[in-house]
Length: 165
Length: 73
Image (tube, rainbow over all chains, first blue to last red; front, side):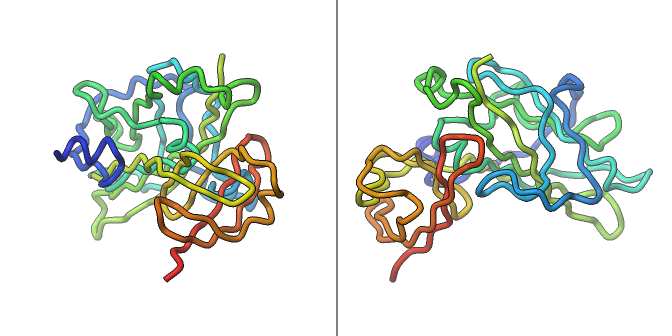
């Protein structure tokens, strides 16, 4: 019953992220900005949220990373991922965070300053007309807790353009 | 760790939209499929059988209209 309720969106999935190697390419990595500009992007997306350079094709299954380094002290690391949330645009189009073995959200095992997610689009939605031309801008929000004493919590959002490539 | 990918719920807005919308974090997104009035004029709808207030705003670069919603008691 629980997996069905998670799939239906009745409740949010809860799992623990693993430490691992970040394999997202540079173009699939976005870095937090310390002074986020007050620039409107779209409804429901925080102003000035950075955008991943590489758009996402709905048929892809590739990792995207968020780098919190500019917000953290030199010896500080991400201790845990408290939450990952997708926006309502993503929900409308069947976009989800993959939590299968080997694809679950990851904290960078080397520097401890990046987190990585694998996104996927439900097969019936991959050919949706909304992904044509300019596609759709969707927001991914990460909330992480660091190992600072006392621990810090950062919540930042990034924008991903999803369109046919 | 909470992973919240939102949900897809039935939304009806008179003259604007009738179908499945994306819902996450207190917001609802939809692509209008009725043409009785401008989505910008919509102020109420029925989300998953519950009456809600709306104030849709068009995405500057995409097809979606997104609105915060509040349940009418």
